[in-house]
Length: 60
Image (tube, rainbow, N blue to C red; front, side, top):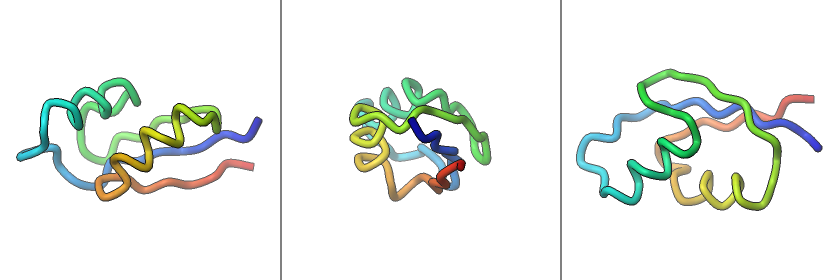
């Protein structure tokens, strides 16, 4: 499977508990932190929910 690099580009201040929990599950705890995940339907769903706070890049 392909890998995805996820970077948090905006703050979680003012976000709901659900959004904060989703970011924690993705492994993002602070601004400009970068994590890598497999491209699975579960990860894509979480990214779609939080796409306004994230930058996504595909790793080849």
